[in-house]
Length: 234
Image (cartoon, rainbow, N blue to C red):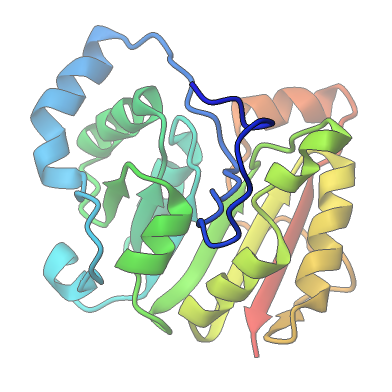
């Protein structure tokens, strides 16, 4: 492997994008493995560099919400069950989480939820048509605690601008975090985006549709804070 410190500089070479995630291996239960084998063909949309047509995917015309980084999918499944009139596309790179959400889709028979297992930045860029989203959910993204890693945080001005492009007029962006320094950065970045309007004076009350996760509940009992931010497209 070439030592990057010794490699000659090439200003014409494309720079590798800094990713906001690291692929981690995780153990999967037999149920998750079975779900991936049997349910993925029905509920997992293959990544492709062309825009999805939601009416073809879901078989109806309805508002579409994109969730980025759904983890193990507990909240995602609960929200889809609570809002049956809305269609949801969940994006996650980690296979155990995809398997877990597939199990929940089967258990609750959620016909309004699909999954894309791929980098959310590329999914947004290539698979989501401009102006097509009723909303975007980004709940508890990796805060990248160390200062030297802050550049890896998902909520940065260029990505937020891309989200706004893909929101329909009046569409919303809902972020939540339990890491106060990240909450402060989110508020600063979202407030600086000219295409967005804050629905609250600073942080928003938790919307009823976002359920408390087990992790969040445990944190609240320990006195940890959780910050919600809800902005709409101007």
